[in-house]
Amino acid sequence: MQRAYSPPAWRYSTPAIVLHWLLAALIVFMASLGWWMMTVEDTPGGERFFVLHKSVGLILLALVALRVLWRLAHRPESLPAAVPRWQVLLSGATQAGLYLLMIAVPLTGLLGAMYSRAGLVFFGTDLPRWVAASRPTAKQFFELHETLVWVLVVLVVLHVAGGLKHLLVDRDQVFARMWPARR
Image: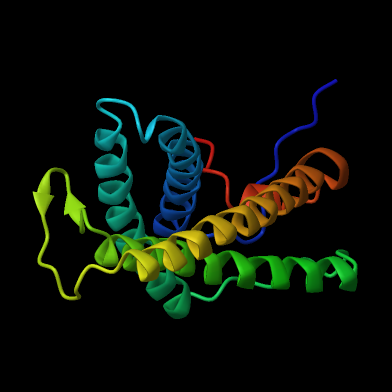
């Protein structure tokens, strides 16, 4: 027997929901593309995946900036009182880590690209070079970028697990706050 749907008492705004799911899709796409492009970097045509990764990364960084600005101006309501304190603390730490990494990952990639010989490219258009190419500096930024991606993946998995727990186990409408509204 299916339970009757009852909307949550409080919901995120439509712009917050759209940004959340758009960034979620882009982050999954970018992590997958990043891992794929490393397997084809030395093959003919492999550079086009790097150009795509850099280009989408710039869009992602702009969307993250928009999301952060939106979040600063629109504070979400607290989790329901029935959610245990340790879950509230874990949720807050995970959210803070996600925001930090959504900024740090594209920034380290941007800096690595700026210092790389290839430079920064946006869909085939070379962007102005603000720093001299430096292979050792680019390598450091790209290594940090890769490490941060793995940390981001761990936090995304934790975030998704928490959301699914609220949806499937607790059934407490926490997940529904960020899900697009039913008509």
